[in-house]
Length: 259
Ligand code: SF4
Image (cartoon, rainbow, N blue to C red; front, side):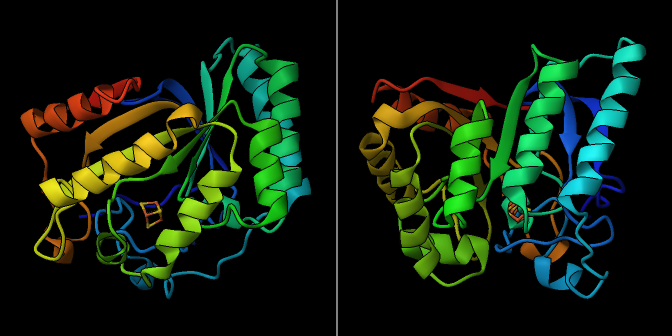
């Protein structure tokens, strides 16, 4: 079963498998998922199911600015200092209509209350063609992590249940970024297996192409069960390590996260 949506604009700090103690930011609706992909493995369940579940009211950049400063002040007074602030939330955060201002307010609040905290972003890469999204990522985020876990447009389309045209769009967006982290989740389903030799070979070609811009590569499999209908299966530690080794052989810094 999928996990419930985040019920607020800020959550945590929580201990994250990938990022240590992390404060989460959800700049999206609190009563439904808002995403441009429909990943078979999404921890929040299928996008199309979630779309009828709520009103999709997105908080304004001004509301978020106030919330950041109030909550950061409260945490600082309680001496509960996050190592990292990660923008993710109930879907794709760059869909926030004022993503640039929201990100600027967050970075400024971070500088004022937790100057040592890294500002991270989990992003599906589908909106990098928008100048304000690109500028926000380049200007305000220390570690933008972009989803890139496929070798072919067919795998992209099956895994994310969208048009294969998104494949070229994401690759074009990555060309425009100066530096990014690769998020690569490997999963097997009856519809698609992005851990197959064919997909991994294509994925390695992408990594090689973007090698100079990639800060590190995060390799993992599903942690939480997605929608039952996806019938998604975990990719085991041994295969993840094999895949990671091939990426390391390109000279990349790779981390493998397993249970
Ligand atoms: S991009 Fe993230 S939030 Fe959107 S469907 Fe995929 S896993 Fe879920």
